[in-house]
Amino acid sequence: MLHVLLLGVQYLCAFLIVSLVLLQRGKGADAGAGFGAGASGTVFGARGASTALSRATAILAGLFMITSLSLAYLGTHKPASSSTILDQLSQQQAPAAPVGPTAPPAVSPTPQDGAQGSGGAMSQAAPAATPAIPAAPPGGNGLSR
Image (cartoon, rainbow, N blue to C red; front, side):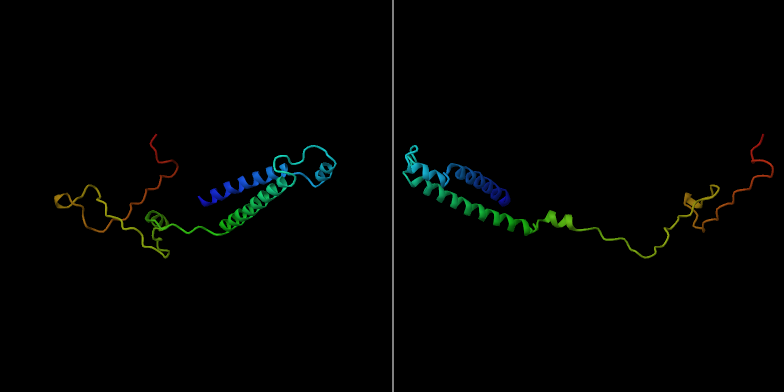
């Protein structure tokens, strides 16, 4: 919020400085006024316009420098981290999985040939070895013709 406010003030100062510099007369304009070339400074007097515009330009230039330094300071320093509960929860990470070797998952025994113990419960015997796949007979693919 402060950053946006300072940028707005700096843009306003820059615009006003450019405007005030364009309104001021150059040093060569005083020589022409000495010989009667137009009404030089009829609003503020002969010397009042240059003094008021110069002073306003100097004040705006100082304000422009202060806002520039403030923006540079804000740009180099990180804002303080907020410590709300939601921010703390989002920063927490889930515990990491163990890196070392792990045991294979336990395999539950499967009933074979519909053999079940009493009450329909599965047999607690050790799991049987996987039956071998019979080889195809020689000279064919094992399918009947």
